[in-house]
Image (cartoon, rainbow, N blue to C red):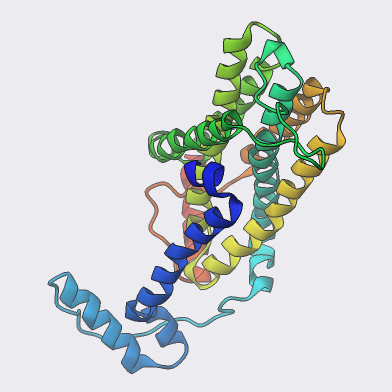
Length: 305
């Protein structure tokens, strides 16, 4: 924030490049995945990596033959195969709404302050440059900093809640909490109550996002896990674009209209989370389609009991 205000956005972007340079320097010292070597036929290198990992952990490599399934490795079609189609479609909808909430809330915050919604103080538009553009003030940067910091508790809450309640119950619980937080911002019960509601909106949406990123990789077997997570996240980004477009398209003064879209999507989110069948808490990560099918069958049997 201090760099941006004093030296401008170019200096800020330049500073963010520095960690990328360190990553490029350190990347050659990182081991390739043993599984990648194995499924690509480079078994000697796979064993070398496994041996190195055991050595670092002061353990002996177990005896036996290295075998890895290569069925449909990384195939996007496998993500939408019959056994995963329903699950993937539900998660795409959940990713879409989650991204909509996360990004649209950020877009909504300046409108709340700019239009003095519920007597909220505005930091915006106090100065303009020669071209008539509004100049960001210190208050703007402080608002962005606070909204970013409010995301941090959400990450910790998501990690705790998901272990206490399980994945599916955590989804439903946090989705309902989000609806309550959105409704809190509708009535004008004072400026500080509005600030509390906005903070709760950010924290609850971040909590849900954390739970989603814990659950999604666990619900797919190893041979398509990365492909599934990447595909669902990419399609979910359409929600981020939609949220930005809808909030900006609506009349900036119609804050309640924007909140109405949050609430409507919130109820859809609750319904979508209730449709999820897989509970992955305390379940071992599965490698193959057969193992995942066994996990699903066991989960269904447990739910019947």
